[in-house]
Length: 226
Image 1 (cartoon, rainbow, N blue to C red):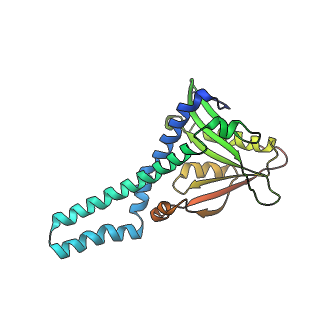
Image 2: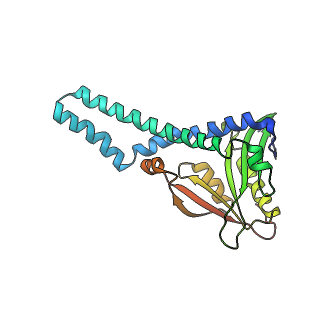
Image 3: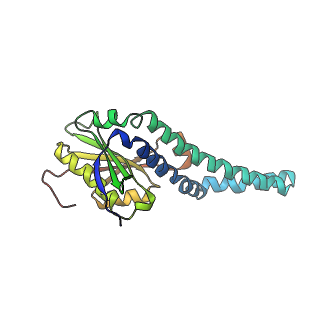
């Protein structure tokens, strides 16, 4: 296990940070595709359309080609949805990481570095309109390079955000993550985050049957072992 350190983001990190972020998101495409294949409505279409075409035309070739086309469409939908998410982030908070995260008090971005390479990221942004009486910060873009997973880097990055929240006087840390991001969900839950609800990012996510979990961590007033 190679040693690593967690430090604040600097502008020279931009390229590897964006590469790591995009790679981490595109890793979910196969899982998204498999998830859609298990949905009852998907199975109805995949088997129902070819069977109907076979009954109408009597052509096995047409039925097989329709099945292949439907599968290609599902793969495209999965790929398109994650690509759209990445591009939206690159147009918003990730367009200028220094400006979004490093220019104001109460927000920050960190990288995990090992052997001179960026192998992990996480960000924290102040919530602009929190519930009355609350001061919230939102955790964004937790990502760890595939070859460095299992080394405790994700937990260390989350601890960094929680410590930052305590130091900045936040009451709560909030975040959103899809139901397909099982490893991230497990890390968050082990570290004390509680699920508070679900929502769909947009119509594509609803079509694919993939809700996003909302989680919250209550920041203790006194330091605790994590």
